[in-house]
Image (tube, rainbow, N blue to C red; front, side):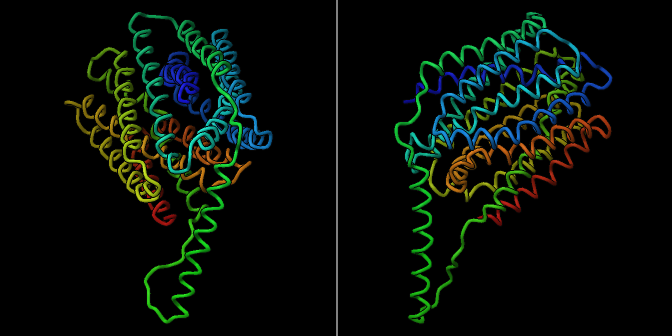
Length: 402
């Protein structure tokens, strides 16, 4: 059954290449205000993606057809990435990227539902970990491809054409391999199980009270709203931190008098950390892992961001220190994504499958504008301090949710 993921692998290759190339490309077009324009580009795209995520999640569950929206996403990405090669006007690139983001998120909710319906509830964490780890390898190869293209001096047009071609391969493979599930019931069963479990615990506590038995247990139900707040805070801090991160890494590399192609290599290692995180999550998957560890992951991210502040204060070995921090951040984010995806399939009802992407997108949209703006106006020290604080807020939210 795993073969259906192959198209997603090539899709992530294209976006892995694009993720580092695009901010460097925008800065090259507009050297004086490149960070500001890239922040606008990212924020506009993500704000367009928020209602689109909810819409795609609703419509795929309503129609119970998932393959068609995956194909639409990959074909739309192919077309609009090709259109990128036809212009160097920043404002036109912003418009194209906004439409591209709408097409891109069309596959997210259907993909999540496919995994939830193709595998039993007990295997959700393991299945999400395998999918994310597998496609993260594609992302990693895309970064390596960017390093190679940068090293050989391939032009921006050729690089964008490669991104488009990879998405075309993803479309063809998904057309051949992806199939809608014959029966759709797993998420419904999980919802019934959680309701019955809550009712059963309530009856048990009531009987203990009537029998005069003392106990410390409390009847507590997960607070979905607090979970959503935690998602937004974590996504916001991540976006503030990582939207301008390629520029920060590029500055560190240049300060060390190293070739700019090393930027791609550093993010390759960071992605390698994420792959290791997905492998770890898959080997340690359990039903309660997400609830237990989400707060710890947010706290770890806050500490690693603080270490970036330390990296700003030193010159010797700064490239190695930043690389090590990004590798650990990739590992932590992999665990976060696996646990939250699995929990979201439990907590979010049918026809609202896109809500997870909406919440993640809301934080990312705000952060993608705020991060580059702060970096341009106040410097990267301010970016890191603000990210530390917001990761701590995410930690508090996840502790309250549990």
